[in-house]
Image 1 (spheres, helix red, strand yellow):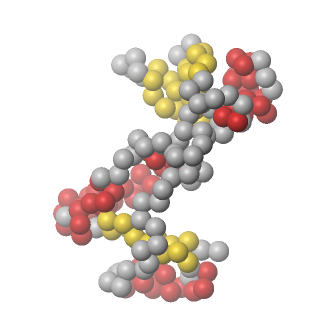
Image 2 (tube, rainbow, N blue to C red):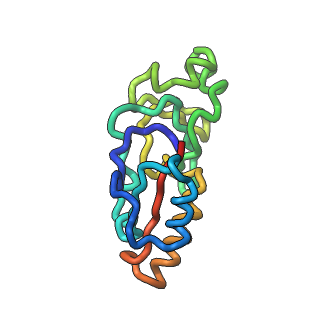
Length: 159
């Protein structure tokens, strides 16, 4: 979803020989466009350090947090309000939209019940607002019935 410079969780494992017929057919139907297949089990996904930050660089846009009901800061996205951040920093919206390139990691601006922070993306944030949540729900449900080692996600990329 977003650039983050993470070490892949299950790179270059290839297409599993014992994949279901439906998955094998879908892979074949992509023909020569299908490349870089791999897979990961639910048991492996359960052990992922989801709060691990990206290794190499801060995210270009400032992260935005809102104060939760318990008073803690709750992640609310990134780069959603460059105009407001521009006002807080005295810069242009274009500079504020790429704040991570202009201020060091850890820089924060408090704006009432909102906080802007320069930070590195975590694995959780990289998938939080995507459709992966539906995939995790299905995998978790299947794992409860069949066991974590018996449920896996098979992926590939196309051109």
